[in-house]
Length: 391
Image (cartoon, rainbow, N blue to C red; front, top):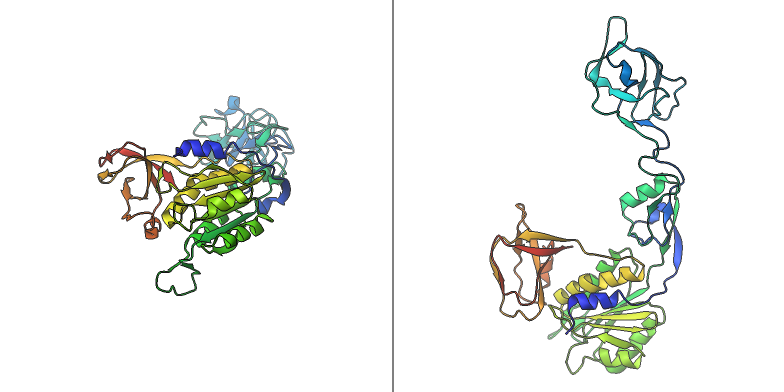
């Protein structure tokens, strides 16, 4: 069995050759940046007021000040501030020459001669200096960045209306097993509805990818091979669930080898999720997940998601926090690293959810993340902290 960290390192070591494409700024969220973005200007481009107030000189704050003009945001001062003068200025407006501070409006008053009197001296200049955030030519977004809304705001501020991003890998998803029927069908005796494909499609779509559902592969070797071979004509990655354990009808590993794939691992020291197969052939990859839906979900989050991001040039690291347990937790088998669905309570503690095993998919519906318990650890007491991998 391969340790989770070993499997993840192996996945992130494979070579890939995805090309790039150009997308508009408004369609770039969730994509992976394939080229650094440089600023086309200083930010701020000029000394600007960070509050509504009066631009003046520190040396004159004890004296009544003569108001010489008002400057709105977007306007340019028409004259410098001289001795015992001030300019009324709005947040974001360019500070006139000669001024070295801005006094907030609420810290001033008008005297009998309509001059500005400073009642409270500012503790700082209230001026955002030219280029204090970004300098012309500076890298503001780096290659490999997973683009969030805040990144797009940065791109917009430096005029990057189009971005060069990694092409999204073509992903085909299969479920396997004669016991499965489509969600709209009523299962016959001995059958169940296919939940894995809907779950995996949604997980991949959350990554801003556009997966294809290839169907349910029956427990027949020839059809397993033909359906996978057809999908490989148009796919970079196949994601399968089921068909990889030790059963008489688990044909996937054998078929992978006939299709020219090298199996890099087929067993993980993870609970649930031991039967997991990863195989490669050139620049095509197959990740075969366990058939039980909780196992399939967990392994996709632990390995599938980081791998797909790796193919696009992004080093995905899941958010992990340490939180105290709301109650004692124990287990009998400590051979593998355990992942348990948990809910985060209002007080910040974590509550392990009622969980009957890797087929109990309902346990995931209220989960906020997966609690990780290292191999060899038998119990954790209430109040002790555990690692939680957030969804």
